[in-house]
Image 1 (cartoon, rainbow, N blue to C red):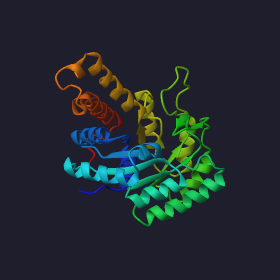
Image 2: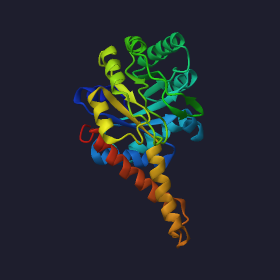
Image 3: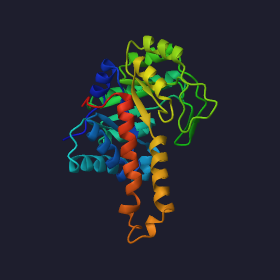
Image 4: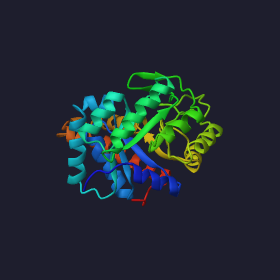
Length: 288
């Protein structure tokens, strides 16, 4: 089996009023756990990698090879895309060269004209190789790879211009935040989402910061055009919680409980369980 572009699965999600989960991977355990959850639920899935995580895992080529090898070794039959999350201009090109099947170029920190010009170049390059592209208009709240956004909300007219470049799916800030949501979070701006969806003529939209958004808001966003939901923090929290419980119970001191294969198992299983729950909530179960 081979990894696929994310375009077809996201276009189908848009038409079917569900969303594809895009789960960040950080190592082998994350990769295995997420693939297991997608296979069990018969759901298409996107494995995505930030540039920081790519560096941690010794580079994009190492990541692509690892994902492909694990995918084949596990006998995965559901569609799987390998996506660069919040890629720089140089990073997007490097991920394309390394064998990723989908990339995000995040030019939201440039002025719009430069964002548009660089996005157009990445789209042309990626599409020439059958690779899907995500771009971003307007910042997403919180911090991603050391870059902090004030969470400015996207301009629908700029979203329309970006959609006209032929981007496959578009990330647009609507009040969503990376990381843990504060208690006083105002929630998603659905009035803005409606304007953006109309402006982009039904180009699939991406919701970053999917961890911690209430389920009713997730469902409403999907009904209004969101077809890809990014998840990272929730899986990190689940992994840490399960690992802490294992150690606090003293299991790492029983027999060979310190063996990393045993030490990391509870956290890995917790990731799979969370992925299964989120896939069902996003509506993509049995859509492979």
